[in-house]
Image (cartoon, rainbow, N blue to C red):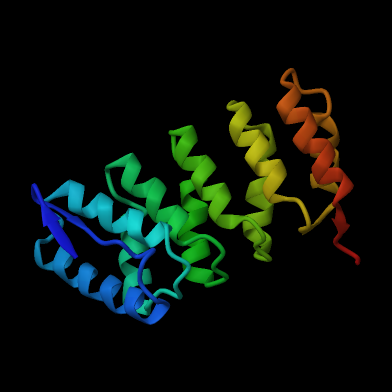
Length: 185
């Protein structure tokens, strides 16, 4: 761990998984001790979480869930990305709340965090986002629905996206439809 100009840096890439995990916990405690007064340290902590493939401690998960509600959009975005791929029902519920965020980048990050989910409510919300005003949110929602079991409503909405004015949205909808797994399968 290195502290420079009041910003804490940790190079997790050069550490083993066990060392990384220990440093991550140590780093989290340090940031907690500082009560996150230094936004740069907080952001750096979250960047470290999102750049590692560690199984997060329960306490760490709780802290990240709290950060999903942070006033800083960057913090919310990185926290969502750090929680990517979880099947924990409580965490998924909190990520679903981010799908309603007014900022399209936050919605997109929440979608990314829900990729591959089996949570029915999350899948329903992803289907709703196929109609989002932001084209990149629509693309992300279509991509997140790939290889997911979903119902007829999703298929109809993906078919509608084949007529979207943006080619990148049409292409992703087509790709999602190719990889469809019907709910009855």
